Image (cartoon, rainbow, N blue to C red; front, top):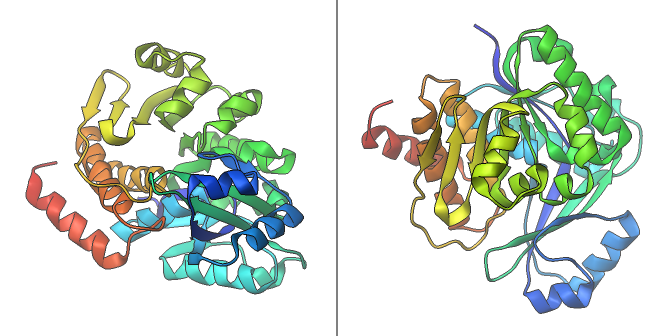
Length: 335
């Protein structure tokens, strides 16, 4: 029995959420619906142009949201990242620990600098747009990866955003190498359509000879596979991953379990904010498959959780909401 169900690594970003309309994004020069990397000056200019309106703040980053979800559902998770010794760095680590996640990162042990921030813009169509200043997270490297925690984990979970920088990409590749040495399974998420669109070669470097589980939404899968046909995309991605989880928004999800496709039905809901939906889906799914659920039932749990998240603002659910979801799920059927 390993100590952790999931070891995650990714960017440490304090998410700051704003509600805006599409016209405001155009006026700010922000590309809608994707994640765009910006420098600190650009981010400050955008914040000034918003003239207030911040609605929520929390410790974020794609993989951080996922491992927090694993812990909220009752699993054990570990997270490696990089923060600065500043107010936001301390806030980030404290918030991570409050979420039940173990980490080897301590702000007081890092040099001065700025912790990364992600401006999350939510438009009335429930779409989410992100402008990210990585700060010291861009310096996340193999030195921050914890080999013993990887050995003590069932899965290593790597976010696709790490592909954008040389040291972060090296950290992801190093984590995969360690996982293979320690017989730890590897899960990788594409994170955003811009990652396979602009960093395809780097993603293939991280994946290397293949991963055990690949998470993607439909658009990300199309970008990496180089096709707009879902069946053809699955055929292409099966070469890179033993199992696939492709989320499809209001159409539910499709799981390839290594033998056959499994359709996961959507849970009807009115979406107001899709921020973090894919991260939560991955966290609920990883919790399920590390706690005895079949792939189908893990997908059902993940679909239910994601439906609850998109019906409210913000990238995470509260502990009492997770408890209610688990109870509803247990009442709904067998494993």
